Length: 136
Image 1 (cartoon, one colour):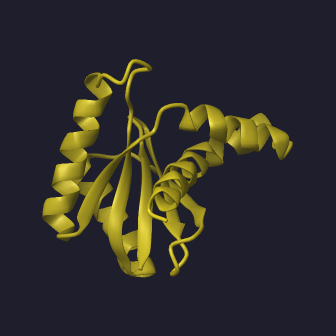
Image 2: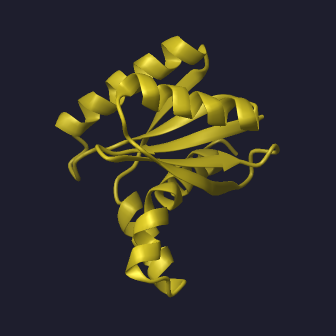
């Protein structure tokens, strides 16, 4: 079963996909946000292309575990995506994933411009990998 990982931001959507065995995730692409309907249509294209059966979306939490205003936006997007696709949508704690993604990209010695282009899909991959590991 292939699973889609999503790092949802205000300006971009980072996407990652698991391998068919559900062991590894890899970054796929970063979409620019246009509006919720078009955003969901773009995600649906990836779902079809990779034959996705489940979706994991990063849910930002404050360091004390509470939910903030961004979390509400994520939950609304998740509900809309579930309604449109009929797929199971799992919300996954994403605390510090962007920091981890930045560290990985710095270690890979990517330029700031290249990091900016891929950081959201790498963060999505980290979110998805955390979920995959929890399922073992």
